[in-house]
Length: 107
Image 1 (cartoon, rainbow, N blue to C red):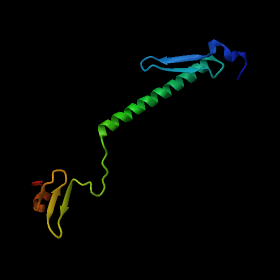
Image 2 (image 1 turned 135 degrees about the vertical axis):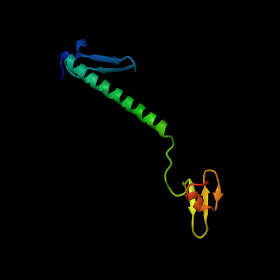
Image 3 (image 1 turned 180 degrees about the vertical axis):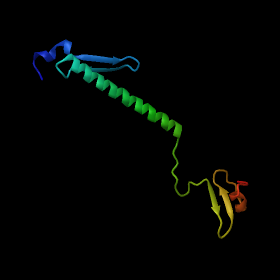
């Protein structure tokens, strides 16, 4: 792949995606049609990567901070033995009426 044909202006291709402003230049092959196909492939790959990154960013914005379900990250603690107590970790509310809370009452 060389020779004088590579230096011709007619074989090189530059494609610009107007909405995003991304420009791709390809002078790798000897024919203009092959260079155009390669440039389009590269442009599509770049646009796909940008779209995927935007999609992941919107998913991250929807999810917010992910809290691990580990020890100490509970919302409510239920103690039934040796004493009875239900404590809401978010509000600090405590009650000894465990049966009432488990039946759907206060808390």
